[in-house]
Length: 195
Image (cartoon, rainbow, N blue to C red; front, side):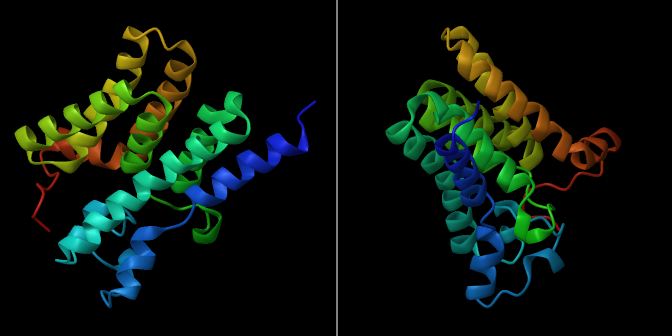
């Protein structure tokens, strides 16, 4: 039977993950409703389309930070739940209660979870993300590549529990990027800096 403590940790992680920092920061910064700008996505790449690089960087850090925080808080309370708390935060970002379950695509949040859960996987994620972003100039290519790298790194490192959670996150992240993948295939996916 699942304990109340387990439910509380996972629910708290979900609610933490569901904080839409991109929307909050763009409103506080006077840049308007992020959902009415660019792609309408709530993540850092779309915040960048407002022309506010500082807000985009803050969104990236906070979206990653909430994933890492969920793992670390759970680790301090109930270590066996740490990975699943990170997963709950990731799901919260993708499907936030406050936005009628229509959230972001999860790249920064998965990076944060990966770094906190087993840092070599997070490092692999970050390095592959940045390398593929630099090569392709497309945010989606970088994010998708990094997400694939994390469970591979965890598998190579013998982190069997992390592999399962990261693999499920990767599959969800790919699903959320299905529109980007379609545009990549037909050559219409914009590069970073384009509209």
